[in-house]
Amino acid sequence: VWADGVHFRIRLEEDRLCALVMIGVRPDGTKELIAIEDGYRESTESWAAVLRSLKRRGMRAPVLAVGDGALGFWKALRDVWPETREQRCWVHRIANVLDKLPKRLHAKAKAALHEIMRAETRKAAEQAIARFETDYGAKYPKAVASLRRDEPELLAFFDFPAEHWLHLRTGNVIESPFATVRLRQRVTKGAGSRNKGLLMAFQLLVMAERRWRRINAPHLVPLVRAGVGFRDGVAVERRPARRAA
Image (cartoon, rainbow, N blue to C red):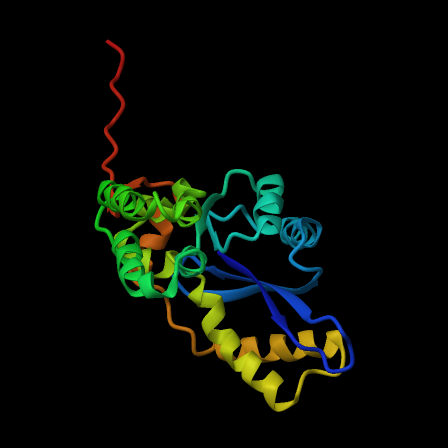
C-alpha cells in the first residue's frame, strides 16, 4: 500500500483539508483506492482510525507500506499492523536532504542521491551512502543525518522483486492522480466545505482509478503475499528442510 496526507484549500474555512489517502495493490497487480478520509494534520490518531476501520472490515496486514517521513502514519501502522514492512519515499527524502545543502551543490548532490536510489544491490547503495557522507559530512552533517535517518526503511525495497522497485521507491502512485484533484481545486478556488472537498477528491480518484495500469510483473505479487523472500530483487530459493534420520 501507499499512504499519504494530501492538503488542499477549503474556500470557506481557514484550515486546509488534510485528506488521508491509501492506495493498494490487489493480488492481480491492479491498484485500488482503499481509503480517503478527513484527517487532522496527519496525526497518529487520525491515521489509526483509518487503519483500524480497514482492519475491522477484513483487510489483512499489507506486506509493505510506502510513505514519506510523517510520523503519524508510521506510529499508527506499528500499532495496528506491526508486521507490515516500511518503505520511505525517496522523492521526499531527497528533497529533505537537498534542503540542508547550499543550492550550488544541489545538482551534484542530487546525482549522488539518485545513484543510491537506483543502485542494483543493497551493498552498492550502502557504499554510495558512505561516499555521500565522506563528501558532505564534514561541512553539512545535517544533510547526512537526514539521509541516514531510517536508513533500513529507505532500502527496504531491495527485499522485494526488482520489477517492483520503480513503484516502491516513491509515493508517486498517490501524488500523480492527485494532480487532477489539485487542478480542479484551483479552478474552483477551493471546495466550499470539508465534506464537499473530500467528496470531490473521492469522485476524481474513482474516475482516475479506471485508467490506472497494473504494476510491473503482476505475476510476482502473489509470491510477495505468500512470503517468498527476495534478496536484491531476486527470489531466494527455499531449501527443503532435512528429514530426521
